[in-house]
Image 1: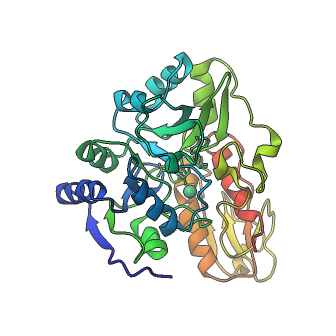
Image 2: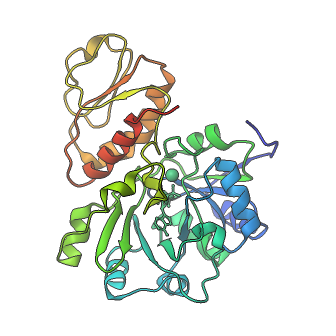
Length: 329
Ligand code: TXA
Ligand code: MG
C-alpha cells in the first residue's frame, strides 16, 4: 500500500547527510545505513514524526524504538547509566550494542518512542554515514529497522525501497551493511540481561562484565503479553514462505539456505543460497536477511535451513531463523 509520498533516494555523501539532517529537523522519515541494518529515522523528540514512523512501518505502537545518538554525553542526557552500563558503553560504543536503561528525569525523547515504558533503549552506531547524520542533526534519532513490520530487516537500500517506497521521505544509499543482523540489546537492570542476541556476540560482552548475562524469563517471548523486549515477538522476522529449520536434506520443491557444504538434495532444490560456504559466522550474518528475502521471492514450497552453530554471531542468526520459522496468519 502506498501513501503517496515521493521517496527521494540519494547516494551517500555530504549532500545526502545534509539533506537527511534537514529532513529529520522538518519531521520527515529518513532511512539510512547503520553497521547492523538500515534504520528508519525520525526526530526522537517529535511525537508527530514518530506517529508517522509507526504508521509507515505498520508497527504496533506498543513496540518501543531505539534512540540513536552520536556520543556518550548525549546518551547520558536521556538514559541513567550505572557503573555496568558505563563499562559496556565504553567498551563497545560506537558499535552494534543497544543498552536499555532507566530514563533520565529530563529525557527529551517523546513518550510515544518509549511506548510508555520507564526505560529507554539507546545506541551509538559506528557506521560513518549514520554518525555523520546524527552529528549534523544534533539530537536523538529513533530508528527501527527500515522494513515493514513483520518483514526481515533491510541490509541494502534496495530492500528498504521494496518495503517503504512511497511511505517515507528519503533513503540514503550507503551500499550493503557490514554486520547484517540487528544490534545486541542488553537490559541494564540489577543484573545485566540479554534481551536480544545480535551483532555483538554475547561472549564479548560477558568477557567485559566478567560474568554471564542473565536470560529473560521464558514468558517474555509470548506474543500476547507486553514483552520485556517487545521485538522478541515470536514472529518478528518472518518471510512469507514457510521456513524449516535444522534441515539435513532438501525435500522435493524446497529451496535451500545452506551453511557450509550444501545438504543432500541441494542439486535438485528450487533454489540454493549459501550463507557461508567456508562456515564463517560473520559472513553468514551479513548474508542472512538478503538471502532470506531472495529465497522468499522464489515461492518455493518451503525454505530448508541447514544448522548453524550457536556461538558468536550464530546465536543471533539462530534467533532470527527461529522467528522466521514461526508461522504467521
Ligand atoms: O541494529 C539495530 O538495533 C537497528 C538499527 C537500525 O539500529 N534497529 C533495530 O530497531 O533493530 P528495532 O526497532 O527493529 O528493534 C528495537 C528493539 C525492539 O525489539 C524493541 O522492542 C526493543 O528494541 N526496545 C526498545 N526500547 C525498549 C525498552 N525500553 N525496553 C526493552 N526493549 C526495548
Ligand atoms: Mg526490526
